[in-house]
Image 1 (cartoon, helix red, strand yellow):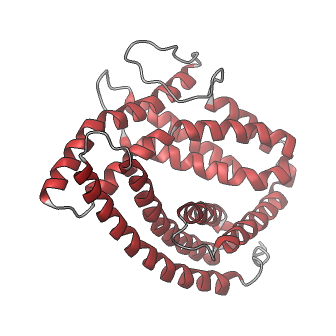
Image 2 (cartoon, rainbow, N blue to C red):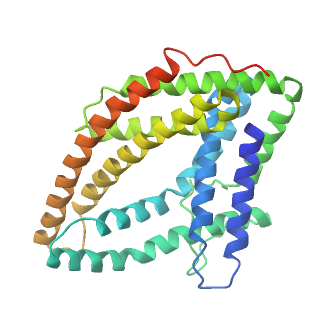
Image 3 (tube, rainbow, N blue to C red):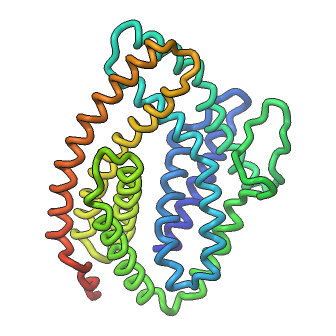
Length: 307
C-alpha cells in the first residue's frame, strides 16, 4: 500500500514536469498539478500509522519534509478556492461586476502559485539547487534555509518500506486496521462541533478527508465496507469544504483592497447567507453519515477478510 502511494506521487510529479515543458509563458497543466497535490495528501495520510510499523524515529523526518512540500502548494489552493467561491456567489449586478474585476486583478497570483509548484518539481527532477531570486522567476514559499526535495523523501520512505518485505502481508493488515480505526475515532471526537465554529468545522473536514483517503487506500483489504466508508466521508468532506471555503472568503473580504465598503458589504452579506444554508445542510448530513459509519463499522473495524 505504502509503496503504491509513493509511486503515485512520483509519477504525478513527473507528469507535472513533462506536461509543463512546453515553452515559456505557457500555463502549466492544471489537472496534473491537482493530481500531484492529491497524491501527496494521500501519502501523508498513511505516514502517521506507518510510524508504528516502520519506526517513529525514521518516519518522522520524512513526514516533516513532505509536510513542508504540502505547505509550499497551499498558496495555489487558496487562490483557486477564493476564485471559485466568489465566482459562484449570487450577487447584484454592480457587486458582481466589481468582484469579477477584483478577481481578474488577482488572477496572476494563481498563475504564479501554479508555476511555483512546477518550478519546484522541475528542479527536484533535475537535481538542481533552488532558484535564488532571479527576476520574474516564481518562488516557492519554503522555510528559510531549507531545500524542498521531494525525491529525497520518497526514496528514504521507499527504502524503509522495502526492508519490511517479509512482513508485507502482516504489515498491510495491521496498518489498515489501525489507520481506519484511528480515522473513525478522530471523526467521532469532533462530531459534536458547533457549525458556527469555523475552525472546528475545518478540523472536522480534515478528519473526514483522512478517513476517506484511508478507506480508499485499504479498500482491497476491507472491501465494500471501506468503499462505502470512503463515499460517506467524501460527501462530508465536500460539504464541510464548501463551508470552509466560505469562511476563508469572508476573512479575505475584511481587507479586500480594490473593493469599496459597499461592495465588500454586499459580498459579505451574500457569503453570510450562503454559510447559513451550508451549515444547516452540514448538520443534517453529518447526522446521516455518522449513522452510516456506525452501521458499517460498529465500534471497531472488523478483522480483514482472510485470503
